[in-house]
Each structure stands twice: as structure tokens, then as C-alpha cells.
Amino acid sequence: MDFNVKSGDSDKLRSGCVVVGASAPRRLSAAAERLDKAGRGQLVALLKSGDIDTDCGKTTLIYSPDGRIQAKRILVVGCGKDKQLSAKSFIKIVSAAAAALQRSGATDAVSYLAELDVVDRDLSWKAAQIVTASRDAVYRFDELKTDAKAPKRPLRRLAVAVSSRDHLDAVKSGVANGIAIANGIELARTLGNRPGNLCTPRDLAAQARRLKKIHSALKVEVLDEKAMKKLGMGALLSVARGSRQPPRLIVMQYDGADKKTKPVILVGKGVTFDSGGISIKPGAAMDEMKFDMCGAASVFGTVSVVAELGLPINLVGIIPSTENLPDGDASKPGDIVTSMSGQTIEVLNTDAEGRLILCDAMTYADKFKPDVVIDIATLTGACIVALGHHTTGLLSNDQELADALLSAGQTAFDRAWQLPLWDEYDEQLVSNFADMANIGGRGAGTITAASFLGRFTKDYRWAHLDIAGVAWKSGKQKGATGRPVPLLMQFLMDRC
Image (cartoon, rainbow, N blue to C red; front, side):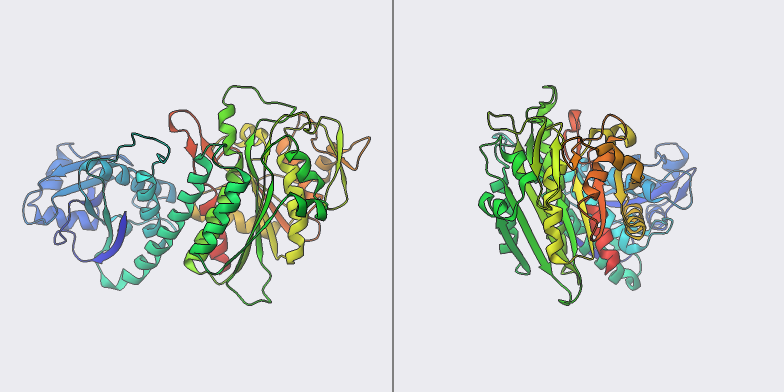
């Protein structure tokens, strides 16, 4: 889909459809008022007769509007009762508009929704949301379907419009950001949606090399099993033992700032399929364990957006990648492994493998002398129990970093919620036979997993994002979401 920016009155721009808002009980947006005036009161008449639904997110499509209106259709989107919209309501409105446009038969459209008043949000943010919502509406993962059928008349062009030319620069900036972020989200979704037989550690390494070809500012290094053995990554390699697919440690480095500027490091869990290993998972919905590399996918997506926008920061993406499968050589409950840090770990449950590959990657991250390190992982089912599928779990050893991530999540409406990381939880990891166990018992599983990772991050500021509840959807909507790319991008843009 192509996006552009236009200025002018809503009744004078030619298009297949013009999109405006209407609030309860009978309040038209400024752009809708112009359409009503040019259309001899048609919109007000439809409001009075109840033929336009003003509930938030409801849509009404009007064909062949009356009067001097240049658009072939008018899409009126309900904005609810509030005079000033919340960010949540606005996202609901633009998402509903995007879905309705796909059904409308219009191949091009002009949206005036960026002119709606949203609490604490500027034009640039609103324009970006229109773009990402529209791209989300048209996204399909059908690269493996032999009979994939495109919509008969898909929306091909969308203009984000404002009445005044004075606002064009802000909207252009928002549209550019929205396109780049949508590209990153779609990359993360596509990698997550690919099956485990087509998305292996070597495939992820190849994806990193493809990104390097697209973005010359990227440096890519891939460590194989031999290199990891030399570095002493015994925790990561212990997870890979049951798989015939060799593990990879993928490093993507972007230098957009002065060499003296310490980098932000993103570490993404890249378990391309997680059976649980010897501690095997139940068979029901095990196919969804292809999504256990969504942390890695979000790092790919974020790195690609940063490179596309050319942000003035230094960024390193580190992806430890392996499968976790049962085999005659697989790690067993009770095995003790030695991490790259030299600390020993008693593996009480082989299904707690994400923390084993992350701990070596985060020890490796120290070589870059980071400002902050953020790991992103579908780490614990306990996070879903605690927070459901609405928010990312956040834990950190630095409150300033945690606050910045929480704020970014609120701005991007890709929210996180902070959980405590107290010493009492760390005590649950005591082992009789090694420096620590890889699980801490039934209680507070999300926190004890982060406590485990905290033992490897004492030399720098670190935050952990548990995305087990938000990385993908199940049921009829099954598929990767691309979260938390919006949160991470807002965090990085805030730093710029």
C-alpha cells in the first residue's frame, strides 16, 4: 500500500473514499462538517435518522454522496461521546476505518482522522497510527498457500490529509515513521509465522545477512557452534544438544552515532521450536511453539526500522538461536552446565531453556560496553497467568530504564507492566549441587526467571521484557503480532 500526505478541504479532494469522524450524539468533525455543507446537509440528516452509528469504532459507508463532494464515497467513523479521544479510542477508530476501507471497494482513499483531538498526542503520532493500522488491516501471511487469493479491489493508496498546509511537515514525519515501523512489525510477524522447518537458526542467520544487503549501515556477525564452544557458552549449547539443527549466535550492529556513544543492546530469544526437550510439553497447541522465537523476531524488526530511519544511535541486536528438542543426547533434568560467565546451573527443567540461551548471550553483550541491555523473550507461561494477553511483563535492575520503557509503551500503546525484582525471589533459585537452579518453583515464575537472568547482568543497566502473553494470538486469529516492536521503537526514538 502506498501512503502520501495531502492538504486541502475534505469536499474538494478527489478520491475513491474520504474518511471522517462523527461523535455522539450528533457532532461532526471539522472535515465532516465541510462534507455536510457541500452535500446539502446529508450527513446531519443521516445522524438525525440514526443511520450513522457514532459508537466508538463503528463505521458507516455512504455511496455516491450528494452535492459538490469530489469523493465517490464517504466513510464516517464513530468516535463515541468524548470530545477529546484517548489514545486507545483513537487506535480503535483508525483500525476500524482501515478494516472498513478494505471492504469498501475503493482503491484509493483520503483520511482526515489525524485532525481528531487526542489527549497528549500530536499530529505526527496520529499520522503514524493511521499508517500502521492500515498496514495491519492488509497484512496476510500466505507465502506458503498455493491458492492464496488477493482481495478483488484492495485499497492501494491512502492519503493522510489535513486542512492546513502548516501541518504538512508534522504529518509527513509521522507517515515516514509509520511506514518504517509497519515494515518492522511485518518483518517480525512474518518471521514468527513461519513454521519451524522453514525458520531454523541458520534461516535466521540468513535473514540477518539479507538485512545487511538492504541496509549498508549494518554489520553482521554469525557465531557457529565451534565459536560458541570456544567462548564457553555451555548454557546455550546445552539446549541445542537435542537438535539436529546447529545453533547460531547472530549479532547485528548499527552505528548511527559517535563511536564514543555507548550502544543500546537488544537480546532476543530465538528458540525456533520449543518442544520442552526431555521435559516435554503437552501435545495440545504445541504447534504454537514455533512462536518461541518472537523475541528474536522483534529484534530483527526493530533493527530494520532503526536502519531504515537512520536514527542517530548505536544499536546492537544479539540473537541466541536454537531448537529445543528431545534426543538421546539432549540435556536431562538434573544435568549441570557451565555458563559463559563461569557460573554453574542445575537444569531442573529442560523446558526452562530460554533463560539458558539468554544468559550466555547477555554475558557476551558485555563486550560491547553497553549503556543499557534489554532482553525480549517469550519466557514464561506464568506471565500470561499474571498479566493475560494485554501487556508485556517488565523487570529491571534500573528504575530509570524501567520508567523509560513504561513511558514508551504508553506512548506507543504497546504497554508494559513492571513486576518486582526483590532479593527474596532470587533465593528460590538455590541449588544443592550448583551455583543456581534454572527454575525457582511454582510461585512467581516470571519473577524468578528474571531473577535468574539478573545474575548475569550485574555489570550494566538491564531490563527484561517477557512477551509470552503478547507475541502471538491463538484461535481463528492465530498469528504473530509483531509486539513489542512499537514499544522498542518508541523507546529508541525517545532517546534520540
